[in-house]
Length: 186
Image 1 (spheres, helix red, strand yellow):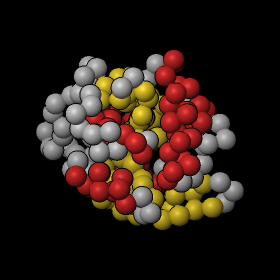
Image 2 (tube, rainbow, N blue to C red; image 1 turned 180 degrees about the horizontal axis):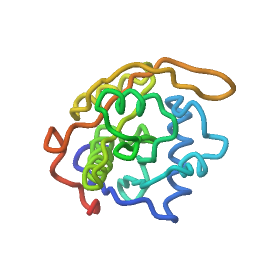
Image 3 (tube, rainbow, N blue to C red; image 1 turned 90 degrees about the vertical axis):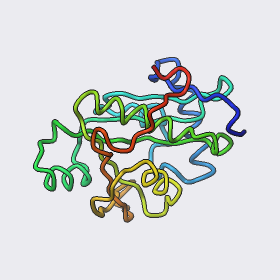
Image 4 (tube, one colour; image 1 turned 45 degrees about the vertical axis):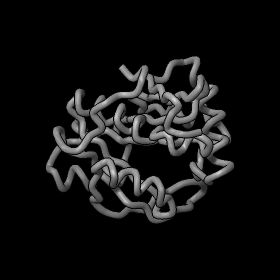
């Protein structure tokens, strides 16, 4: 696939969940992301703290996903709230971002990030995330989009496992953001 294809980003609907779960399993098989959640991908994509989620489609197929959730003890939230002196209620967590390999190179991740970031800003929320150090492509995407590193954390998963993660905060309102939306993202 290439950039001449039209990416459509829209709020995730109930009927998108199974296709998003299938895409997640595909990404896990090619990239090892996520390190947890593939045993029940629909549940992993719909955590109790979920605020909003979006899917990206390319040629009518769900090829990507992103979500924002209420804080639930994440180290990135603690780092940001301590640094910015803001309550958890002004922060949300960007998570569950993935794009299937064959759709990469079409700015799918950028459009998903733009939808989530713009929505959070409209709701008066600042987004944070953690990303495993091994996920260098994701780190490059966040930095290209103006996200700032705010610290390091241990990303815990599975049965007592953990790995190093970098914590990021989204751009401030008015900072670098993608301003043009792909078809269907309204």
